Length: 455
Ligand code: NAP
Image (tube, rainbow, N blue to C red):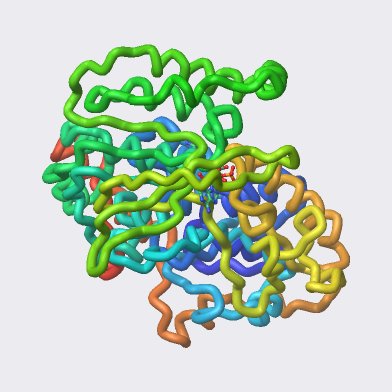
């Protein structure tokens, strides 16, 4: 089934969010021996969520997981894509509960965690998600542009998003042109005059959250030398002992030590890796003149304390890659402390712990923004196993199986995009890519996207 109406006596499940967690949940549902029809809602006319709008554009290999995720929409499966439908506006949680036997929320995270330091509101200080949305061609950032004038910029955080952002800033025009970024984004990167990128980690090299594969890519930058103070790589005996038992940390430290020994080759850009440094104040009036950083020390209980030693980096832009944060979904319980939908193994709970039968959650909305794309496979499988256990009870609740949600959407004038519509946009983008010898050229603005989904 691909977009045309099919509502029968089989159980019907709504999946809210067509990102990796939602689509792994669809796959797990299809792999069960229970006959089930599935509608996958997304606020955008394009599927794949973070694979399309989060995985860095120079990581096309990782985007190949799309081949697995799109398989569920093939002929013969009762799976529909209903894109350009905003949950909570175009359709409510209560309506989904009435139209479906079960609902899975797989909406990921929508916002950035902030730094919470003075000057953060200045133009030139941004959350990484804004920047990632922009270079990934997300419609929310279609009107945005970033002044890549530098010459010095800072990226805060020691996770993979910080690595992605710093790596893209360090790449040459030719390297960016080999990706699927929108034309306008390519234009901005091409005129970048950034020369020095400072990556600020508040902890040490033995505590960074980088995964080794992603860190290793940094060492292969054609356009930038990596500069690290070798002193920052001297670990305490306790740290040496700890990393001996932690493969990722051990390999990370070994890579960093190797890089610290490399003489700079005079490449056009420089990536400075700072450890034990926190930004404490962004300075400037109408724009950023710099960022004050403070050296940190680790306390016996594992927390950090500022040492009172300050330096100022003369940066003109600061990107905080300090983690993403989910927002509450209308009509769905939300835990303000964990920023997740409260759940037990994927079964949604009220704030006080009472189960919400028929409602499930998967992915980052369930466990927070951790893990790589593949982590969502087992995560979604757990949620789906629990849903399937409940399905007989849920099907006896008396849902009117003659009702089709697409009728309701049409009555409301919602211009939903079906799978065939998405494929038209997909073909348009890949054709543009072929013309420019690029993997694809993304269309970032919503109206144009919608136009290309139509025949
Ligand atoms: P993350 O891995 O949680 O890293 C966040 C970093 O920000 C940590 O180093 C954290 O330090 C630091 N931080 C938090 N608050 C801070 C503050 N106020 N000041 C300074 N630093 C602060 O988050 P992420 O990088 O956003 O990544 C999210 C998930 O996506 C991760 O699981 C990541 O592996 C995954 N991802 C994977 C890929 C890939 O596989 N290619 C690419 C991108 C993202 P502390 O450790 O001290 O808290």
